[in-house]
Image (cartoon, rainbow, N blue to C red):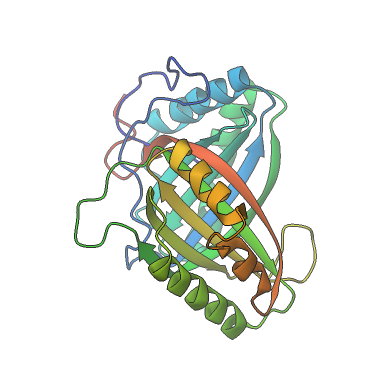
Length: 261
């Protein structure tokens, strides 16, 4: 899915791994979100990654906003030069399925015509459970890096996942994480895990000031005598495995900012 700022400028920038942002970042805590859909594409190279962002923008900017039930559509470029992540916020999961039936095909056809061979790696339906702010009482800076951690659990019990998130947030409150702006934890609603198992998932969407701050936090976790937050996370009941990916924000599409061409 995609983003909209009303701007038709290219997503390219001096750093090929960092498309120029267009539009506001989504509010992950907005109360009218009934379903947050996260999906990923594999496009192959940084050049194709940039071309895919441009093709998404063209496909969305040239058409009216499909439905008021779509609250925002956002695209992120992976720092690996291959991955695109899509976050769309919907009033309900049913409204997403209606969009797929009525509006998705023509947009995807345009994108695939511009950038053939995109591999679509799957989609998950999530709802935000809780968040943590590292800038309580102050103005949050613009994030320079988004880190998405996808966690599998060995049981579907949502109470187990909520308890895990509660414990992680308590750790974040007691162990300083310089550079961590916020962390928003989502529980999956569709019962699917990344590897086709029956494991449930938690997705942590974390905003950092920059990649250097995140790298410093990772090193601190691994250093002997450090906070060992990673080990504590992995030792909590239900945790099975996790996988992280780093992104830069590329585009945001919202009602009233597309279909203006």
